[in-house]
Image (cartoon, rainbow, N blue to C red):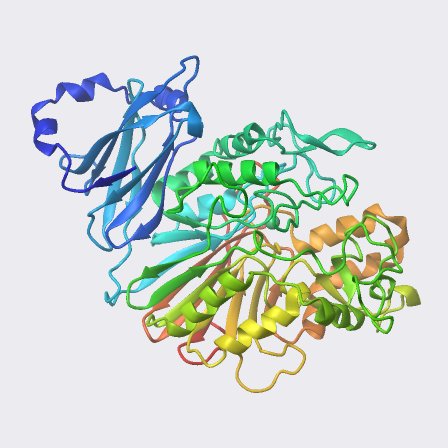
Length: 590
Ligand SMILES: [Fe+2]
């Protein structure tokens, strides 16, 4: 519901101090009633979304929940106060849109319910569209919980200069509890998925993927028990979009790909709808969910937020409207797209050997034949409507910097294995993964052509679990002239890095043993082959901070955490910084 500042019964509050005594502030009570913390999101110049969840324990609810907002941490004067309801329909989550606030102002908020007052949260509204202020924000993605720890959130919270907000680019939760491709379970960092689908029935029936609404809600509840994550939410407003794992690995529309077509075409709108509802319930995003509609019409998450004179954010959804991967996992090696001429390469020419496998279908595909097939298929990543919204929004924006919150990487990610002493069958120039924009290169070129010439467009990206800084050209194979835009890619908060995943794939398959010596050379091969990269660290974890200094420059600092598999952390942070000077579309060390 929406409440307005100024409607608070401030006078009543001043004359009824006994109310404070009705609500316990004992930390044990707060942990019992608000175990998933509190959050704020989608800051606007006049408002913000506030969130919490009231744990019902043995009670059935519904519960009254008082929301209080103040400019001071002691709540001496309230600018908004209202009573809302928490009930089972949305899993006892509470989302309140507060309006009538002042721009670029810090507020404190808390909730009161079931006799307990929540801890205090802090948030900050956006600057007004003409407000000439410096902006500092973080961007992050990919926080796999399994066997891994969120030291990166602690590093961000402990920064001397706080950020204004956090842009989260997806993979907030992972839908599996031990996918052997990238998850190694540890005793205190495990996830329970009670109703899930068995991911590997013949190998390990305990490995499941979330299936029901209860499963997806359970993921958010288990992830939010992490103290560092809860602290980050309590300190900063988040602006969230999703990527694949909020539903299913490398998903497209309402299709998962986890089961390599073993269950048919993996279309499951009921499962997609459940994942969407859980995201809506647990993220403080200013979007609406239509429980009666079918995906993707049940919720639209692509949106823009103006943040002062110098920043406008454009947040895309690269899962709900995209085409299937160019090479379907279940296709035969001698297959071609439906209706394709016999002159088009086969999937086998791209490298496909294994049936029902992502390897050589969407991961590690040979570039020249893949490009021919992609040009024939012309898949879409955004869908026509979103693409038109994005390109017109960025080209017409009056903000100094146009920031594209972009889930999957734009920079062409090639690995040339031809120079190495390996079997001929493996020699070739590969795309690391065709799930990112490399697999949708016709549409990428169309978008970059539309954006080329627009001043100060910056893509901020997650998904790939690596730190990269890149200059993006309209044609990544012919780097001439000024880049169309720059792209900064943050590694996961915790998820297995790109090189580590590659190591695991090579180590687990005897057919790839001859490639083992190349894995440690990952970044060297990548940057030798892919000229758009100005920096690469494919073994990183952490978070990134952006400092926007008006029409002067935009700086990006990667905060790198060396070890996320140990519960303890010595507090050390590796810092690597770059900047883009206004008007240049260039990445330079800072
Ligand atoms: Fe991820």
